[in-house]
Image 1 (cartoon, rainbow, N blue to C red):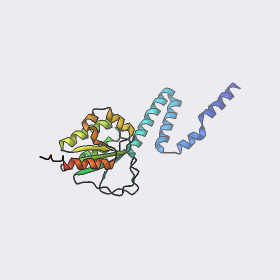
Image 2: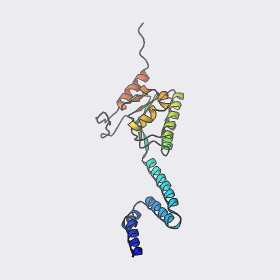
Image 3: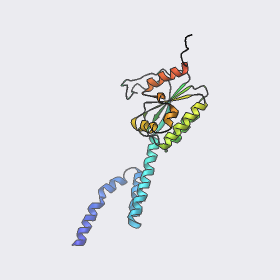
Image 4: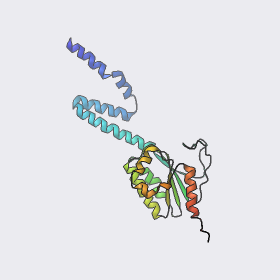
Length: 213
């Protein structure tokens, strides 16, 4: 009787229907499930949990890196491109000559910084006076991403350019404010939105107003 009770309990805990549905899902998720299951049966539960967590974490980081994107913005934007804090739809931006604007999307962490290096660090030209990073769609920033931004800020200075960031969300902004990069960037180079950043860029390009004698 006790054996029968334990058999029924184990069957209910196994969730066979859920297991079969997961196997029909994405292959990578199914592979993690099968590996964890086999390790549980043939090796040890502790080992299976450890391996499963590591594999799931690597899979998650890979997916986050895939959705991260960096693209250059010219004088045109999509009609449905709305500023999160401005509430307006911008069909066109007036980007001055000598200003480069990059739209950064997705979590900015160690799994996505290589794409940033490839698309931004390599495109910095000598005639670029201001570089604007539009970070309104960056929900998270880690230490590696912050280090890449700091290196990029130094590289901009070496090229005689000024780095501006705009539309920074709360978590990345909090990370920036508690790091030396905040002093390197200067607080007035952190703009609320793209319009404020472009106005700041125009002031930098035009230079300080001449003093009247």
